[in-house]
Length: 422
Image 1 (cartoon, one colour):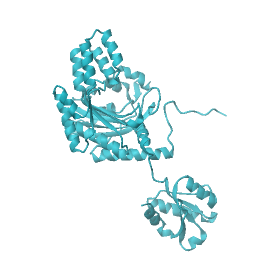
Image 2 (cartoon, rainbow, N blue to C red):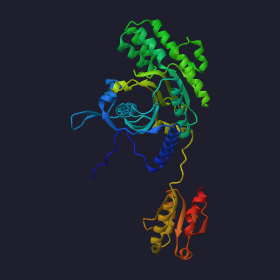
Image 3 (tube, rainbow, N blue to C red):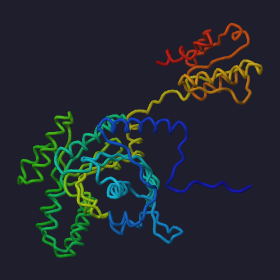
Image 4 (cartoon, rainbow, N blue to C red):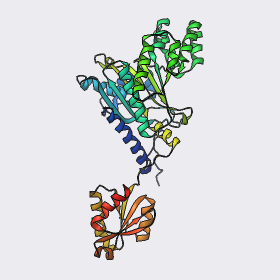
């Protein structure tokens, strides 16, 4: 016997029960996007590798699945989707009316060490609002993110909002070596102040600059913490974002100036959302405002977007309470005897045509085994097709929860089931 072929490390198989939960959560997320006027886009699962190295730097190649196609072109499975959406915008959508509101759902691939909530193939839902850099667009995107999480069923989460311009300007004004400045921002993004201190010592950078950066990165709290800082364009921008969010009914956000999201194209407001019940790996969303289109050959345009890790979201939701999904089947049709099978097939066809989730015995089991099977697959009702009942143009409707059986006219069984399941 040949050995079993195992699935690749860092990937998963999802069975029907898990997919029912994921599909329900995903539908709720999509509905929230539609309510905010965002339209769905789909981009290729693989792109030229350059698309992602231009966006994130050559270092990302070590984290990607990169391969040569038959034309000897270097391609990559997408490690994220924002770059693909912006490439699509530059290629085909740049003449569309602004703001352009787009969202996506898809799988991504990163070659990293698998751990809880982190896989080599993972799934994202994200959104990009393309067209303007102002507090209203930033607030709109944050409000969408909050509504997606609420719609999906997550109750306990924390929204942290910052502005990358404050620390970015401070670092780049004081550190003229662009590579060193980028390294400082990268360590800030990782919140690795020990390593950043070592870098300052190794490069003989001013210690008072380190202290100033660390102090700004430590500014956290409600909106009033900004009153203790020099009032700049960035602090005013954050205040206006909070004002719009308050009008939207979102009032429990926190200021966090330590959010850096070290990539160069982030240019203004940045935000993250945490689900505290996940513990150390609690972040479920990251985003901010950026400029990226000119990197791909387009005209400069401001955008604000985010991506949500669906895998980690599922963990966060289930940490609060199980995701409840409707029964897999509304009805399971059982022929009482072999001579009733054709009648059973006709009944299941009728129920399906009426929009009910219905199945029928295909294994030629007896009644007791069929009822046991109906229970095991979570059918809400069993419809038993017997000779005596059919003589009266009726079937026996069995409630699989209570065990109660009712004689129902065959023409009315679909409407009766629909009425009972609401």
